[in-house]
Image 1 (cartoon, rainbow, N blue to C red):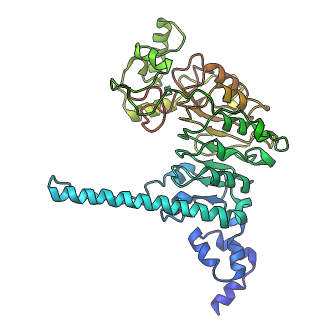
Image 2 (tube, rainbow, N blue to C red; image 1 turned 120 degrees about the vertical axis):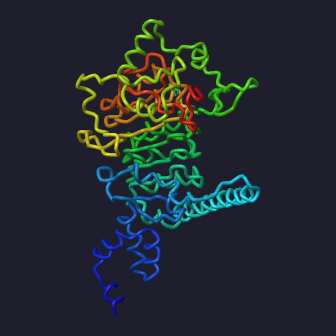
Image 3 (tube, rainbow, N blue to C red; image 1 turned 180 degrees about the horizontal axis):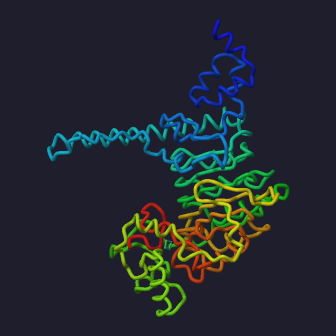
Length: 432
Ligand code: FES
C-alpha cells in the first residue's frame, strides 16, 4: 500500500527525491517499474559524474548540483585514496614472517588496484553505452582524474553526447589528441569553463587547435585540414630516465644553462642577482637558480603559488573572474562562446609555440583567468606572450609557466612553475 502511494507521487516530486539519491540507489529504483526507470534516467539527476570514485565503491554524486558557484572542486577531487585502508597499529618488525605478510599485503593492494581499474573500465563502457545517451544533456561535470580505465574513444563520446559539459578533469590520464576530435563540431565543448589536462603527456598542439575551433560551432575545421603534428621532433626530455653517467636525460638548452649555475633568463648577472634578492625579500623566490634547496617543499609550493611580485594595477587585469577556489563570475558580457575560464596544460611538454599560436586564433579567450603551462618545456616567451595578449581577464597569480623561460609575459607578476619537485609531472628543474 505504501509503495503504491509512493509510485503515485507526481513526477516532479519523484524527481526531486531522486536528485538526492546516489547512482547505486538510482539504478535500483530504475528496476521498480517502467515509470521509475524513466525518471531515474532523467538528465536532471545526472549532472555530476565521478566514474573513478564510483568504481571504488564511493557512490556519492558530489557536494553540489550546481556549477560553478556552489561546488568545492578541491574536496570533490580528493577521492583517490578514500578507500585505501591503513592500519596504523600494524607491527612492522624485522622478522621474516612480517616480511611475508608485507609481501602478501602488497600483493593484496596490487590486486585491489587491478580490480579497481577493471571495474572502472567496465563502468565507463557501460555508462557510455547505456547511460550517457539518455542523460548526456544534463551532464555538467565529469571528473576522470587519475583514471586508468578512460580511453580516447570514451572521452570522444562523452564530449559529443554531453553538450552542456562545463567541467572536465582528465588530469594524469593517458588520453591524447584523438579524444578531442569532436571539439568545435556542432558546438561541442562550447560550454566548457574548466578543462584540466595536467599531466596528460600525450597532448600536442593538435588539441590546442581543436580547442581554438570551439568558437565557430558552424565552421568546423575538417579533419583532413587539421595540422599534422605527428612529425614534430619529439623532445629529448625523458621523464625519470638517466644517461650513462646517472644524470637525468634532458638535453633541453635551458638545462644546459642551469648546469652552468645560472638560469637562462636573458639578463645580465647583476640584474639577475638583483631580481633574485627582490624576489626573496618578497617571499616568492626559491633561489633555485643557484641550487639553494634549503626551502622545504611545502614552503616552496606556497611560495610558487604567490605571484613573483605584487600585481600591477593597470586596470586591465583587475577584471579577473577566477578566485582560485573553483568559484567563477560571469564576465563575458554576453559573449556565450568561449567560456573557458580555467585551462591547465601542466606537464604537457609536447606543446609548442605553434600550438599556443593556434590557440590564440579566433578572437581570444575573454574569460580565461587561470592558465597553467608549468612544465611545457617547448614553449617560449614569444608564444606565451601571443596567448597572454588575447586573454584580457588572465589573473597573473594563476598564470604559471616555466621559471627559465626567457622574456615571458608579465615576468614580474606571473607565478612560476608549479611542477618543482612535483615528482610526477614534467619540470626542467626536476631533481634539483
Ligand atoms: Fe622549468 Fe618547471 S618547467 S621550472
